[in-house]
Amino acid sequence: MTQTSPHPGASSARPASPARRPVVVIGAGPAGLTVGNILRAASVDCLVLETQSRQFIEQRPRAGVLEAGAVRGLRRRGLAVRLLEGAGRHTTCEFRFDGERYRFPYTDMTGHHHYVCPQPLLVKDLVHEYADVRGGDIRFGVRDVTLHDTGTDRPSVSYRCAETGERHLVHCDFVAGCDGARGVSRTALAPAHARIARHDYGIGWLALLAEAPASADCVLFGVHPRGFAGHMPRSAEVSRYYLQCPPGDDPENWPHERVWAELRQRLAAADAPPLQEGRLLEKRVLDMHDYVVEPMASGRLFLAGDAAHLTAPIAAKGMNLALHDAFLLGDALAARLTTGDDRGLSGYSAASLRRVWEYQEFSQWLSDVYHGTASGDPYRAGTTLARLRRLFTSPAAAAAFAEQYLGTSGHP
Ligand code: APR
Image 1 (cartoon, rainbow, N blue to C red):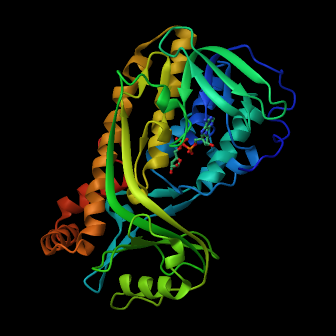
Image 2 (image 1 turned 60 degrees about the vertical axis):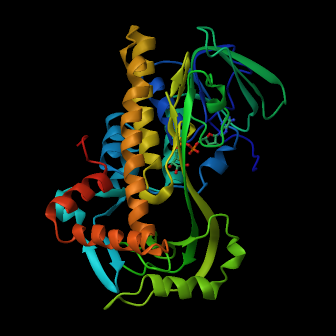
């Protein structure tokens, strides 16, 4: 875990120990920072607690694609405006199966596109806005964050300070649990009031970063009997690839030659230009699984983002869902604390979960498409290919896929 002193401007002039804040936000990822920014814009005081250093969260490589709805939500709240003006756009994807290339030009079909926005750049922008522009209080490198009495109307959060090792107790009205998949907030939900639905795909993805330019002008999805393969252009120097592998596989089982041989086979198609091969900068195995906490709130504790639900990176929905939650929760907390209007908070969990389940369902559908032909089951292989072909023969099927892929279904 990287430990550096907090970035200048963020917390150097802060009071030693805030004893009381209307809201304590746990976690400075896209969800927590967006909630914090919305509260600061409404002149609601809050404290953000983050276990990592500022430098670490501004560089941690994570998700990279934003839906138009998430971008509109950020713009509407004056967040990441300049960053997103200059963001690249994804307009087309290409499926490769049965030795052929099938282009899916979703922007031509729908007028909508994806924005390319690496999570570290978004996080850096949101921290700057929160701490340096809107004057928000954020503590980096905190330890032993513990939630107390969230089932009562007098909750509090305690933590150990990075610099002094001293323990602080902060009383508050509400706690926003935005501490991601490995945080502590989820465990503070009363088990009698919350249930966790889990799904394990039984599939791994070897996530690769290659020091090489893109091999195509768009995202590629290779659906092959040897397993799924994906390609995502990143920059002139670096490209991302994925290879389906057994869950829990050791990246050391995937030396350079094996990786490129598999990518060549799984992404092979008539008239396809050869892959641009290069040194592998990163090799990680991701075990595909999902979970959803229902409800996402209990007493004075409200969860947002990965703290409440995880979607496997199959459909690139995680950061979009985190932001959707944060818009709803930030607005609802601001309304409650400035005007006493409780409607947003009481409807928060149900409103978030509607979209969460919609995206879970799409991830599962897409997982069947990506992994069915390699399942070893000829029946699943046959139905997978029928589904894929339908995308290119039925305008209705194509439109339905594009809506879900772009996140415009039901919420333009
Ligand atoms: N106390 C305080 N902070 C914590 C704690 C804790 N006990 N545990 C974790 N954190 C911090 C993490 O260091 C991280 O900075 O909470 C933050 C959570 O951020 P994310 O994991 O980015 O989660 P979220 O904001 O919900 O965004 C979801 O992140 O995992 C990706 O792809 C996913 O794009 C999605 C997005």
